Length: 157
Image 1 (cartoon, rainbow, N blue to C red):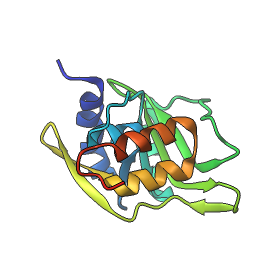
Image 2 (cartoon, rainbow, N blue to C red; image 1 turned 30 degrees about the vertical axis):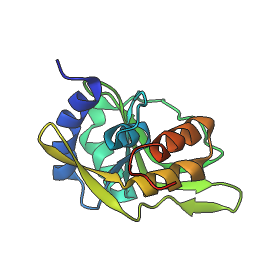
Image 3 (cartoon, helix red, strand yellow; image 1 turned 90 degrees about the vertical axis):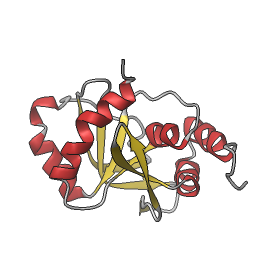
Image 4 (cartoon, helix red, strand yellow; image 1 turned 135 degrees about the horizontal axis):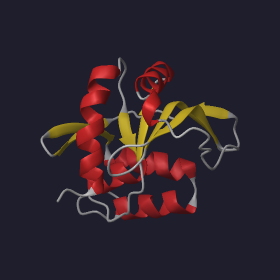
């Protein structure tokens, strides 16, 4: 039996490849897990362009969890939508921005690697990029994930 993360990747990634026009990446707990960190994954977080987020919202309208409000609106903003998928929800963050006290700044991935999952190449930030992004978010859960990524063999401190 496939685990929930693999199940949602098998369902969502082929559609993302077909529907998205701009680069996209998995971020958050799913990316950390795919990099080798021992973290639980409750949803699949996707970082996309605003245009692709709108395109996905239109294409996945029947899966939309209407009325879902993500936590952290004071620190994060994006063209956000949450969708029901087999295995776990998919959360799309189009043009994600973070306000960590210096005004709104785009969350950008500067180095992406491909991780093979069930025969599919899945784009995730490199481990140093994941650590940088998670530490910029500065929430306890993100700092914990960053620490687990730092502790992976071969990861520079």
